[in-house]
Image 1: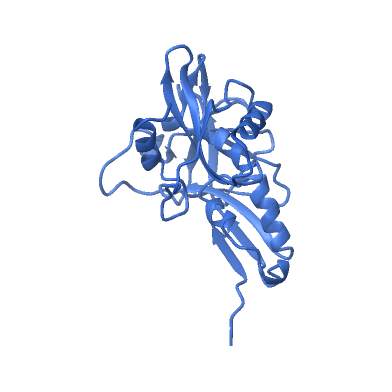
Image 2: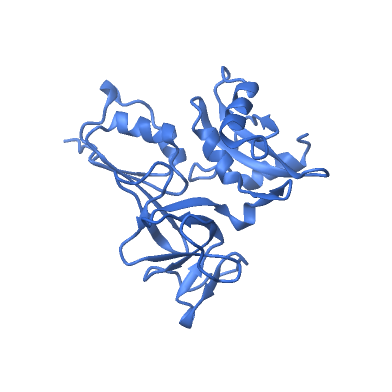
Amino acid sequence: GRAAVSILYATPAQARLLPEPPGGVWPGLRLILIGGARLDTQTRDRLCRFAPNARLHEFYGASETSFITLSDSDTPEGSVGRAYPGVSISVRDDGGQRVRPGRTGEIWVESPYLFSRYLRGATGDTRRRGRGGRALTIGEFGRLDADGYLWLAGRRGRMVTIADRNVFPEEVETCLLGLSGIARAAVLARPDEQRGHRLIAYIDADDGLSDDDILKHCRARLGPLKAPRLICRPAPFPVLASGKPDLRALKAVLSGGAP
C-alpha cells in the first residue's frame, strides 16, 4: 500500500514551491522542519494552513556547525529560536567582547557538533577562539534578546555600507519574501558614488505585482535607506539545487549591465 508522508524537511525556497495539497490539507503530516534560510511569515502561514496537525520547527545552522537554534510555537515572530540542546551561543563585538542583550554583533557558537576543518580551501569569515578553538563563528551577525532568542541580521561577507550605515541584504530579502506573489528574492549591491552602495533586488514574482508596489512595500517597512533602488526580474531566475537563489549567477547578471 501507499505510505503517507508524515515529516517534511525543506528549505523555505522549497516550501514555497510546494503545490496546494489535494483537498487543501495534508492531514497526516505531523512534523515540519525548515532550515537553510529564514522562514518568512507568508510561507509559514501557508504551511500551517496546509498542515494543521503538524508541529512546525524552524532551525538555524550551517554546514560548519550543524544545528545552532531551534524554534517552537513560543518563539517570537522573526526569531530563529533558542540554542539547540548542547549548544551555547554568544554575540560579540569585533574586539571579542560580549555585547548586551538586544545589541547586534557576531554570533559565536560552542557545540559538540562543530566541524573540524575544511577539506579544501578556507574562508576568512569562519574563525575560532578560546582554548582549543572551542568557539566558532561563520561570520553571521545577529542579536540575542534577554530571553535567549536569537535574531539574525546577515553574513559579514554580504554586509554593505549605505550612507555610512551597515546594511544586510538578507533583511531586505526577508522583507521582499513577505509580500504575496514573490516566490524568490535576492538582493545585491552596486557601488554608488554618493551613498557608498545601492541595492538591487532580483525577484521571481507574479506579473500582476508591479515594481512600484514592491518598492513601496520595502520603503514602508525598511525605510528609504535599506529599500532597494531597483527591481530586476531575470528569466529564468537562477537557483541552486537546494532551491536557493544562485548569487554567483546573479552577480554575473549584475556585472553584465544592470543599471
